[in-house]
Image 1: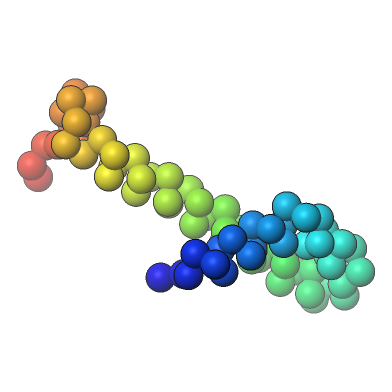
Image 2 (image 1 turned 90 degrees about the vertical axis):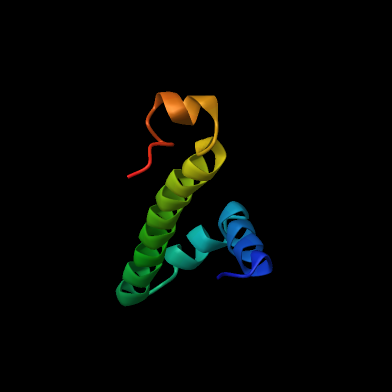
Length: 72
């Protein structure tokens, strides 16, 4: 699992504008790598949202209403 400090550092790197600055001055191959990493981060965020939703609502009334608590 990714360490929280590394995730915080990546968030700060993006938030600070440094990633955009690095992208601006990078060679085309490196730009592709940066875009690939951002795409993976977006995919991971989408999966994290799905998992968090299941964890939060698994044993709740709303989870029961939506079928999330159904034994399959």
